[in-house]
Length: 585
Image 1 (cartoon, one colour):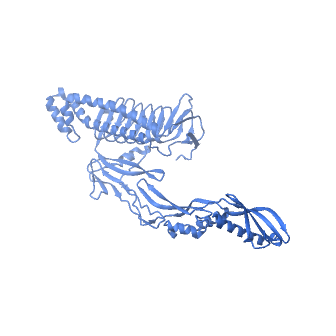
Image 2: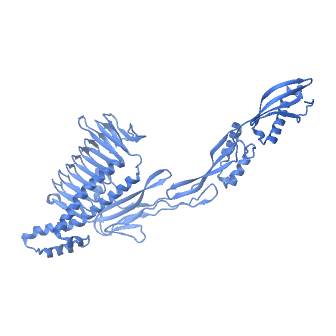
Image 3: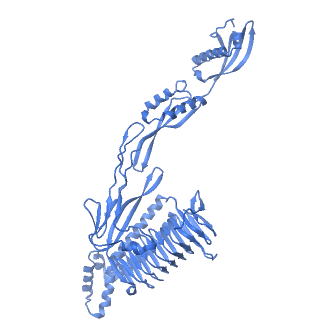
C-alpha cells in the first residue's frame, strides 16, 4: 500500500454477508489519537454503507485484526460488522371502544409501532414519528406528546423497537341520566314488616300510582383521536306499562288505578354488555291493580281465583289456594296447605309442613320448618329455616339447619348448620342448579294443572270450557246453569257452587300454566346460551355450627364448624372461603 495518510485509499480485504475486513494506512501518531482513529473508521463505514446498501447506523467497529509498521506509517486491518437492529416505517393502529353491544365508538385509541431505524435506514426521530402519526389522521390535541418523546428516546438508547404504545386517546361523550320510576307507595320491603309492605300498596280508584322521569341526554360532546365529534347519548330508558285495572297517561309518564285493590309491580331486567362485563339494568316496569278477595281462613278449603287473596287467620291443614294475583296470609300456614300464586306470596306468620310456589317473590315473617318454598324471584325469611327445601333467585334467612337451599345468585344467612353432626345442610348457588330446580317444580305443576283442566272440561263440556274468558265468566256460568237446568232448589245448591268454582278456576289455571310454560322456555334459552351470572355468592354472617355441603357454580365442597362468618365463591374452579365482611344490623 502506498505511503499516504489519505484515508480514502483503503482496501476491502474480505466481504461477508454481515462483516468486512478493511486495510488502510495512517501515520503512526494517528493510531494513538482516538479522535482521529474514529474519523478514519467513520470514513470506512460510510464507504461500506454506500457500496453495500447497508445503513451506516448499522455498522460498528469490531476490533483491530492486525497492525503492520511501515517506517513512519502503520498498515491497519480492522473488522467492521453489521449490527442487526429493528427497522421499518413507524406504524399507527387504532382501537375502537365498545360501550354496549349496540354502541361502538370507532378510532378511540391510537397505538404506535416504531423502530430504531426507519424504512430508509435512518435513525428514528420524533419528527419522523409525528409525520407518520399525522399522516394516519391523529390530531395533535389528542396526542400524548410526552409519552411519544419518551418512547423515541428509549428506542434510540436501547437500539430496540416499541410496539402498541398508546399515544392518543379519544374523549367519550357524556352518558346522560337514566330514566327513573317514582312510586307513590312502598315498592320494596322485607320480611320483618309485611303488614307495612302490604298495607302501603293498597290503592283506591283514581290514585296516582307512579311517575316516570324520562332519560336525559348529556350536554358533553366527545371526540375520537381523528378529531371527529361524538354526540352525547341519552341514559337508559325504562318502559312503563299499565297492566290490568290501571291506566297509562297519554304522555306515557303516569299510571293511575282504575279500581280499589293492591298494587303489584313486575320488573323486567335486561343484561347489557359494557365492554367485556355484563350489567343488569331495568328494562320495564309493569303496574297492575288486583281487586282483593278477603276471606277468613276458617271458611276456606280450596280456592282458585284471578283476584289477589287476603287470608285472615291461620291457613289450616290441607287448604289449597291458587291465585292469578298475590296472596297475603295474616297468620300461619299449617301442614299440608299449599299456595300457588302468579305474583308475590306474603305470610305474616310461620310456615310448617306446607308448600308455597310463586312466580314472583316470597316473604315469610317467622320460621319455616319441613316446608317447600319455591320462588322465581327472591325468598326473604325473617326467621329460621329447618329441614326445608328453599329455592329462589336470591335467598335470605336468619339461619338454616338441614334441608337444601338452591339460589341462582346468592344465599345470605346469619348462621348455618346444627350442633347435631347427623344434620347436613346443603346450599347451592348458581344458574345451573337453580334452573334445573325450577324446571322440575314447573313440570310437576304443569302435570297436575293440565290434568285438573281436563277434569273441568269433562265436567262442564267442551262448549262451556272453550267459551270461558276472563271477562265473561258470570255469563258462562249462567249458561251452564241453564244447560244442566239447575235452579234454586236447596238440593242442588251444592252442585251450583261446585260448578261456580269450576268455571272460576279455568282462567287462573290457564294463566298459571302459560306463565310456567313461558318460564320453562326462557330457562331452556338461558341454558342454551350458557349465560352465567356474575359474582354468585354464599354469605354466612356469623357462624357455621356443623357440616354444610356447598355448591357454587357447580364447584362443590364441604365446610365444618367455623366460629366466624364467611363468604364463599367459586374462583378458578375451586371454592374460595374468606371471612365475611358483613356486619349484623
